[in-house]
Length: 179
Image 1 (cartoon, rainbow, N blue to C red):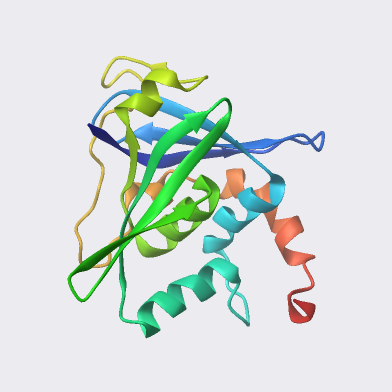
Image 2: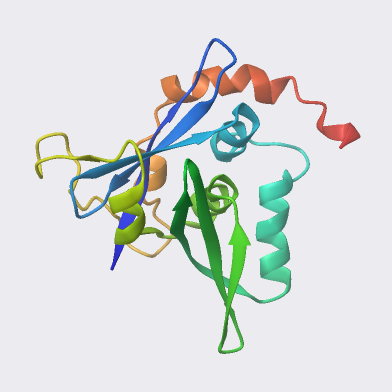
């Protein structure tokens, strides 16, 4: 069984340590933190900012479009210790393709393309840091997904400007022209 999740928060370490992305169940009251690096967190947060040239994840979205492939979903399907394993599921001309990916990269694409992020029940049963709660108690489990006509999904609506503030300085100081 797969559990649909949404980006709930990006946690930033001010001490230079690891950051985390916190996924929250869309229909079930579950939270899953995934440790990521600051550049990976910045790539996810960058969806809120405009750049003159496409960043790597934006470029991947453009390539998918040019190839007429459709990204369908992200699936976090394994965990080995503290390392999560994900895949980006893509379809083209009726054929399905599963592309191995770091969860942070797949989630960066998911927030740009409004894709569902699924986590297998096996991962939720084995991963460290999983928190189960009561539906409605902390908002987890509510279905706040919007329609498919381009409205933003809950992945974007739960990341506040304040949560992204720490990334603004990092993103604005990147020398994107030399990349």
